[in-house]
Length: 233
Ligand SMILES: *Cc1c(COP(=O)(O)O)cnc(C)c1O
Image 1 (tube, rainbow, N blue to C red):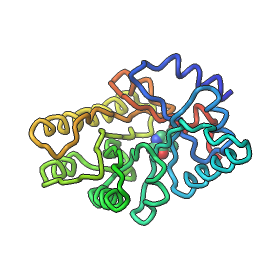
Image 2: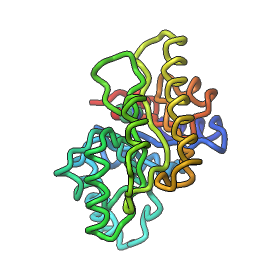
Image 3: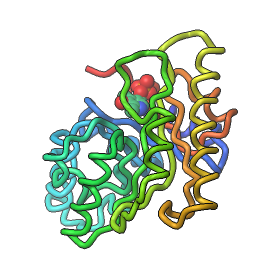
């Protein structure tokens, strides 16, 4: 089942779109099964759970006596990250997709400097109609870009957004369009400022229910959970 969906998605998605399999609330064995089917990038949204899975992988390697088992797996962090949890997440992930405030961005930069790492991040933008979803508004993004950014230990690779949870296709499209507009603001700024890292082209949008729309509109990363692993428990 997991196997079939992964293979179908790999066939279906354009080569320019990266599939992140969102494995939150599913056991390590489900990740292993997806990995066997050819999936390499996995998304987790809770520091504790990510860390448990990273540790589990280390145990499995020891049990099998294969230090290279699943060594090309790539973890993406997609959930709300508190500044006191950075050390549970940053050493292990290739991309933090959910940087939702300047405060968090600064904390990550500081942690990177202290630990000799440059952390790849996406800025999470608020594009949905729901109040509850977090992220930068267009105004906050503009403020950040026009501030005197001097981050040396974060690399801003693009934007992430979540559309309104609805079946209204037109509303989903207008949410994604808002993210495209914010990407335009980012790109306009790259021309003017040395502070934004080059190659800010990642656009993480699209989940199980809306990824075809997102891909049609130019997404470069889709985050798909329940369609692959079943409903979360
Ligand atoms: C859970 C989650 C997903 C996956 O959602 P599905 O609807 O299960 O595909 C994608 N992105 C984020 C940020 C999530 O928290």
